Image (cartoon, rainbow, N blue to C red; front, side, top):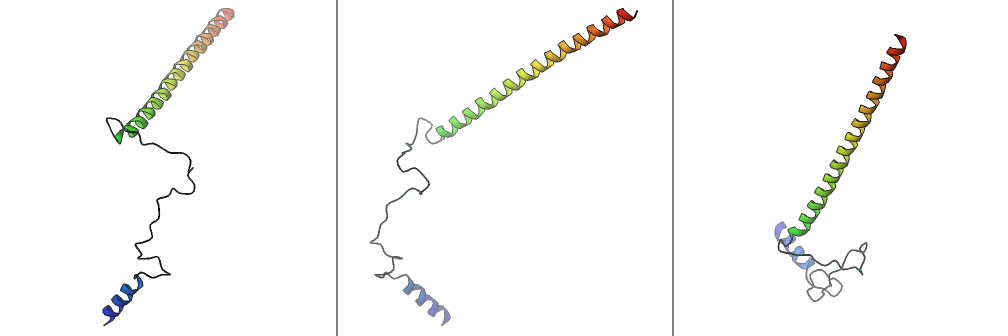
Length: 104
């Protein structure tokens, strides 16, 4: 009896009603963008021979280029610091040699 009572209440709650839009099929709403997106800008789909994956491939290529650029700059900076270190060591060595000659 309890299941029958619940089922009858459930069926009645979704019947079309003039005041209730739930269950109505005559009301169709057009799709809309969220309010925080610019409504004037259209974002065209970009497809090529790779289809959907072309955008992902372009993003991956851009990330790889950025990573290679960071790596190259890091290597250049390390080489620059190493050469400066080498020059400083040569300068210190020259000073030691000069001081040894003066003290002798």
